[in-house]
Amino acid sequence: MVSSARRVSRRQVLELGAGAVVVGVLGVEVAQHVMGAGAPAPTSDSTHAASGRVLRVDGDVVEVQTFLSSWRRSATIAGFPESVSPRVGDHVTLTDLVDGHEMAALPVCRWVAGVPKLLADQTISVGGQRLVASPALVEAGQRKTAVTACILDSSLGTCQVLAVRG
Image (cartoon, rainbow, N blue to C red):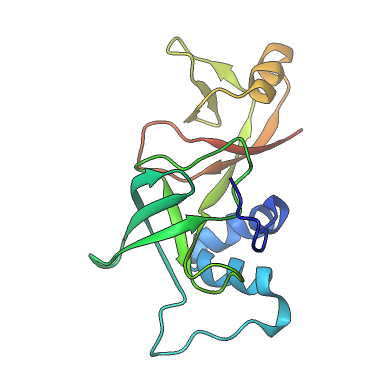
């Protein structure tokens, strides 16, 4: 799913995800981390990052409406694990600071912790958050082992799992 032009590693996205979401500038922080110390600073005449909700998915391209305005833009997804594609309703950050992308859509993620519990509808609950079932969570739930999961923020009732620790 990640474009071959310039790969944004899962580690780069996940390391910044939790803190960046809290301050609401995930796109700028991730983009600067991806680009390194030489990343251009945002300017008043250019929008370098804006978070929003996915409206449409077509392969590796998503259409996103930003949260703070009615601005809509298409972007190529970047920084997603190969097993995860954004769905309509998932949250991403649009940025023009990723090499090889006119506009990139990076995952907006956060961490949840707890012992996974399989629910009747085949979703899994971790720390009170309903998640799409993943093999790592099912296995941890069967062993009754606590995990920390990085999840893709979403407007949907269930969130997708980007990574599992523990």
